[in-house]
Structure formats: structure tokens, C-alpha cells
Image 1: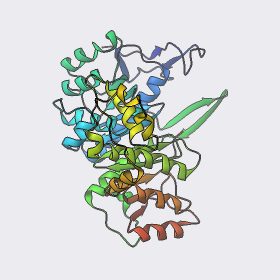
Image 2: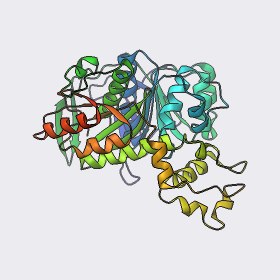
Image 3: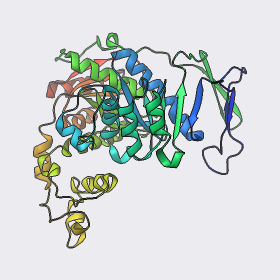
Length: 394
């Protein structure tokens, strides 16, 4: 298939923003091909950012990787780690045969299913039949991958009445070392962020606990690579090779930590037997289950249990999931890794992270209050690495 050097888009970020296109300024061929559908401006922003993320995850870990993007930030990202039966159930994939790539996407999408609704998917490897079947039944705008098996492409071309966006990217493509961006008619120029994220960044541990397990190192690397393509300010909680909470685009660091921590808490609360055994009526759609569960495990629990309301979703009225029960269950969440795209200015971030089972942290360091941050880590036995690098992304 011949690659074009430009693609005309329907419109830009909004319908009034016309004309719109993507193109190569040097006249070279685009490194992407549209195999199905008609991706838009935001679709391609998500596609190109998410592809970079999964490509780097695969290079750093050697494992198949996937990401679920919304509005140019990852709702989730993961490398392949076999899913437990519980995770398969809460990700609604316990009825599917899963390849390693499909498992990675199930984990990337499953951690924050509400945010991933209508996502853009990115795959580090050639899309196989199992991954295509999973994508086909979820609400998703499109997918980018380095290739597709014939069977996978046939499956995806049936999605959304034939309009599902399928993009293939040349995995050998390397962009120019200098990148440009126009804002208000003014062109910005900077060197691309080519920083390699690997275990070498985790060598400086100023905390009393200086032990990072191999799994912790993997998870911290997943966290930092995810942050590299998340709108700043951002923090990312990771467990078992998957992001379980991403806080993006907040003006305050502690608000990022709280936002992502709340998402990590929700991920773990969904695994509580009391939630797994909710008596949903047959035929309730996955999205409606996600929304209902999100309310049930939160402070608005009684909203879904008030007189008459529960009958819309359940065969019988569930018991209240009290705040005390939730806290008791969350106390079992351990071994979580946390990355931050810039330094923590105060120990309050560590206090909040500890509540969500964080035992390993990677952050640049360099705050005038580093001593307070280190002291707070030592209070909880947290091992923290100072990476010395910032990962802002705008």
C-alpha cells in the first residue's frame, strides 16, 4: 500500500476548526496508513502519543504492551502479566481466550473502565484475533498498531458498522530530533524528549529502605514511561505491570496524587467479594455495570440503594458497602509503585500515596523540602528513588 504524505481530516479539535490535515513538512510519506474508518484530529493525537508509549514499554521490558488513551492522556497502560481470575472478571474478559497482547489491553482498559469508555487503543505488537475480538465488543474509537493479522483486520472492519478507525504505523519510523508546534500563530521549537527510561534511573535511593524488587523496578519503569506521555502535572500508580491510577493535567501535585490514588482505590475495591457478588440483572450492559459499581463503592453508595433505585440494576437489594468496610479492604492493597513527573514539594503526597498501598516511589527529587519527603517515606518504610529527571508533557 502506498503511503501518502498528507491526510485531510474532517475538522480539528472542534467542528468549527477547518481546514484540518496531518502532513509531513518535508514532503516525505506519512509513517501511518488508515486501514479502515476516518480518524480525526484528536484521534491522531491520541494515536501518535499512545504508540510512542507502548513502543517504549515494549523496548524497556521486552513484554507486549497496550494503552488506552482519552484526550491525549492514558486512562491506562500495561505490559503483559498473566491476569488472575478476579481481574479477568472485573475486566469482563473471563469469557474470552486471551493472548498476551489481549491480556495487556484488557489490563490497560480495565483499570479505569469509566475513563476508557470510547478510548483510543494502542498495541505494541501485531494485532491478533484475540485482541481484535476484545476491541470489537468494547466502546472504542480506534486502534493503532504496527500491523494486523488478516483475521484481526476482518474482525475490526465489522465494528461500528464498518466505520471503526484502524491505523497502522511503521515501527521503524524515527521522527526528526527537533519538533515544532504552533500556538497563536507563533512556532515553538524544542528537542524531542528522547530520554531512555530504564533501571539506571532507579539507582539513587535516599530513603532508609533501599530495596527495590525486580517487580518494583518493572512497575516503576511502567509508571515513568506512562508519565512521559501524560499531560502534566501527573502521577501514576502501578501494580503487576499495569497502571491502576493515572492523575493527569492537575495544577497541584497533591491533587494529582489524590486523583490517581482514588482511581487505584476503586480498582482494588472492585475486587472485593462484596462487589464481585453484586446481584446484577441479566442483560445489564458492561458500561451500566461500571457506572453502578463506581457509585456503589463510593461515598454515594446509598444513592444506588435508595428505595426503588436498586431495582433498575439488581435482582435483590445489596447491602450497603460502608466506609469502614471499604477502608478495611483497602488496607490489603500493598506493593504499589508510584511515579511522579516532577518532584514532590511536600510530604502530604507521600501520606496520600501510603493510603493506597504505595511501597515504591520514583520521582526527580530537587525540592527544598526533600528532607520532609524522605522523612515521610521513612515513616512508612517506603523505598524512594530520585531519578533526577523531569517528565513534563504538554
